[in-house]
Image (cartoon, rainbow over all chains, first blue to last red; front, side, top):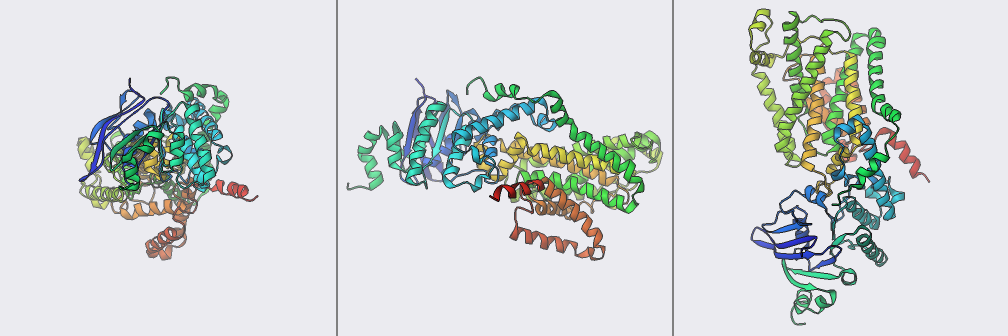
Length: 255
Length: 366
């Protein structure tokens, strides 16, 4: 059987450096999968390959049975693979609402001509876009801030907004790149609930890069461990924690 | 993705009543034509020629500034070749009206009065100029918009200079009726005056058509800003990588912004070419002109339609008031630009419209 996201023997090198080699991953629908590894292990590089920022040198990526490797990022996003960024990348000068509405671009059907004429079809679609964006903000407790500039939000809200924005694409798979970075313990607890809720309510499949081991071990059903671009372990949190190769990668030899 | 798109399903339910929608769609245009009519027919006749010319200059400046704002302001690219597109529009429109008048009516005398035959030929010429400029924008934009930042500036600058040299190499304007009738289309299109300028273009620009062009660029760019595609433009400006990751086809939208802007620059060029007291020549539409338009956008606000409009008005009227210091204008512009970059890089109004500001202050107060 094949999963919703199938990554097969994907590799990329920058100059002489093999950043990721022979990466394999198969995510069944609804999975919450963790991707961990020391700094520089190639986690974000992998995300960039999956989302089309980099083109893999070798290997294939398939989303819902469709090959997407080599596609432009906006096409991949429209096909249902959404992401957040390690260093938050909101549209800072746009309002919170517009940040979310940008992500509906791929789903709107009325052309710019309709928008310039303010046609009936356009007004209907624009109202629908706004309504669905507002609903999404409501789910993330951001509705009251809809008309504020995104750059002025507190840090935790910005992280949530980034997830909300990604969900506006109506993705089938969501890639979260260190969503807990810079959060305090209280915010992390809320984030954990949020990720689980998002997965359940939106029927999503989630791939999570995270350095906070407590969070990863807690919510992920399975974990892939990457070191120097190579998968060194795959398994449940329990299995991975005991894996000698993982212990060595994190703590060095001699333990 | 699921087959039923929730947006499509909802959009039918959310449509406004037809009457209201029609009013919103057509109302602004009715207002534009009404204002244009009042300006030309009721105010125009009492306006001394000098003021009418300044008003025309202001209108052309607004069309140029607001259109460049689509590229430099909304989309965050940096084009400094706007005068080049203006030249394309001006020369194409001028060729259509000048030789058109000769071929149709045997001379450049205006046919018909307000909204008469000559004016419709002018409209056709201006649209042809706009389309030609838009096409030029597409050809310049397609390869260069894959590049970022400075490279685009260099390409647009180069485009303007190449165009200037090409125009300088064109032949003298034909004015003997039988030469014009005997000439081929290519000969006519390349007999546009060279370095001396395209003289003899009929003076068809009036306050009506200037106001219509200004109204069109304002209404259309406002609607664009508040639409799906406009939000895509702004997202590209804010963060191109994130925009792409959110499903915005960044290269396509950048090229489109460039084409829209070039189209309106072409229209502005057509208005300029047919204005009383201007000569269409390659010197006039060089780098310096492009630079003036960039200043309007930078000063008024990168992304602010009303801010750019205000800056276009001020930067056109001010030099008229300070005629004796004319030679220091470029120095003043340079200082202004440096000052803005240091103190307020987003421009006076940034992304906001003038009417947003009072609203924001109210919200911030409690």
